[in-house]
Structure formats: C-alpha cells, structure tokens
Length: 452
Image 1 (cartoon, rainbow, N blue to C red):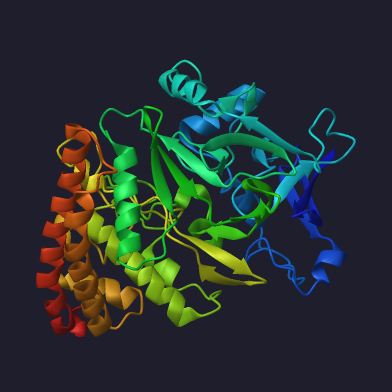
Image 2 (cartoon, rainbow, N blue to C red):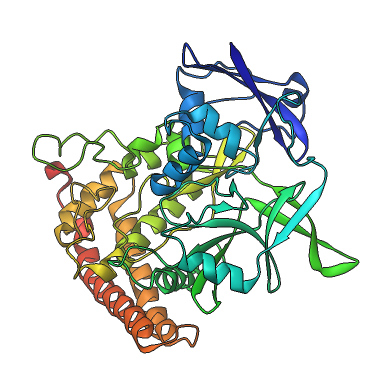
C-alpha cells in the first residue's frame, strides 16, 4: 500500500509525496498548478519543478536531511514507537514545520484530531516552566512538550522552535510558524558555556561584516540563546504591534541537500579517521561545495563561502560540516543564506573528550596545527580560488578579527567570572589564530603550483 503526504508552502499545494513501505520506494509529483506559477520554486536543484526526473534516491536523501539527529532523533522515534530509520513516518510526524518553506502533512482523511491549518494557536511558555524543563532534561527530553515532539530541525544540540514576541516566548501551531530557535546550555559537561560561545562567535561574524543570523542571550536565570530564523518572515499585527499576525516561509536547503548527499555524509571523512579508511573522503568537502553548478551568482557564492571557510579557521570551529551552511532557493538556483552554528570548538582544546579534527579539510589538513601555506594553496586549487585572492581575504579577515574580537569579549552581555573567562579564552585564541594566518597568508601565492 502506498501512503501519501501533501507538500505545501504558505497555504499553497506544491505536490504530493508517496511512499511504498514494502518496497521502500519514494515518489514525488509536483502539482501542475504549482509548476505553472511564475513564482514557483523547487524543493532542491535535484528535485526540479521544471519536469526533469530526480536521480534515484534523491527524494529520500532530501527528506532525511530534514530530520533531527542524535538524541533528538531517538526521542522522536521512541515517542512514536517507530524505527529511527523510518524517514517517511518521522516526516509525517515532524513535517509541519521543518527548515525551509515546505510543510508535509497527512491526507485529510488521515489527519484526524490535528489542529485546523487556518487557526493560529499560541501556547505561552512561562519563564518558570522553561527554567524547570531545562533542569529536567535528563528525565524529560527537551523536544517533548505537552506530550508532543516539538523539534523538526536538524542538529544534535537540544533546541526548540518557538515564536518570540518581545519578552513572550510561545510554542505555535495551526497557521502560525516559529520565528526563532531556542538553545539552552549544552548537557555535555566537556563543553560549558556554549550559549556564550555561540553568541560571541555569531556576533563577531556580524561585526566583521559577514551575514549572520541575529542572536540574543536571555537568562531565566539559566542562559538561553535565541537565534532568529532566516527562513521565516514575521508580519506584525498593525492593530497590536507587540503581536505577530502571520509568519511567511522562505525556502532554504543545507549543503548536503544542495550536493544531493545523505546526512551521514556531512563529514568529509565519511568512515572516520582510522588508518584503513582515513583516505576515503566521499563526504561533503570544500571542493564539492565550491564546485556546485546551481548558483544564481557563482562568483558571489564562492566569495561568500571563502569567507565562511576562513572564519571557521579563525574561531577554531572544527565541526563546520556540510549541514552547517545553507542556501536560499530561487526557482532552481541557489544563493547563500546567513551564517549559523558558529562556535569555537578550540575553546575546549584542553579537554581530551572534545574532538579537534576538522569536519572538512583545508587541502589535506584536518587539524589546525597542520595548516601551512602549502595546505592553503592546495585548498585554493581545489576550490578554484586564486592564491592571491585567498591571501588577501586571509589578511583582511584576520585584521578585522584582531580589531573586533578583544572588545566584544568585554561586552556586558557575558556575566559571571567563569563565563567571561571562557569568552576571553575564545577571544585570545582568535587573536592568536589571526596573527598566525597573517604570517601564513603572504606565503600562499609563493607555493609552486607544480607541487600541488
């Protein structure tokens, strides 16, 4: 028996997703009315609304990248008493508001008891309740609220999709969508002060002129990070300026979806780094990301990604993988979306339990200490970047980091001796890294290309 989900965006039907559980086969069909619209756009460059048949497995790979990962995925699957490999079942349960513009909802005769799609539903989260739920995360999984899984975005960290209206934080349903991602502190004791860490790195990126999602810290009293969603556009009620009337959706896909890779290949070394498999590099890489043929403005996109790659070096974000970059979809073409998930993993280098190997190599270097002018020249070659341009961007961004990082570390938004000390440690690392890159940059164009 084949099961179906309706795919829609902002109230308009886009198509229908089919799944045959026995054959484990997916099908997808765009609505003709959607295809005929001048404003229509595709799920991805690999599932085009213009009529071309997608490659085998492309629909399944696209869907798998919409799901949460790690404990959040296990919670969602356990809550519904289904296998975490049951992509269709999980999309059916979590697909009302994944990342991007589309909703995946069951056919009307199956959606018994669900909230009417045209009814705006807010469920306020009092500060006291949010604080208590953060404290109880080991006993009650954070994604579960009111006996319902409330998380449908990818990633490993505890997070929650919420609507923010001034000081008011709400869970939403019906015709409303979330406007922010809420992150509490990490449950991993090896990575303390992650809220301040991400806030600092995201704010530094913005100060350096990089497009980054706006962030804010609130203390309830536990610190939480609120990240404004760039795939949502809130419309304020003119009769009540403190309230949101509607939330429009903007379509984005992540790097794995753009490359038509499953989420399991978000790391370049897709089988790990042991001696027998360390040279197998089939996963997402800078070379693959820079080589995409779907950009609306290729030169602009590559310039954006170059600065993104350099910023990861500056902050020591070894976990910058293929799902940590996203693109807006305009019909069938892509443009880079603002930066997100910027953290300094190097801030925890003194803890042996925090892996410092980079998710994607610069040349053949997977560790910061392995970065040399040769590896940077190899990175330039693989990404089709002129070595002189790479050198200029390294110098420009390193100088900007030295200008802004120390002052930002003194911001009053960071409180308490331990939190401020951690932020200062991040700032010191970034400044040291910037000075090192300033020394390496002039040597990059001097590397003999015949040796690469």
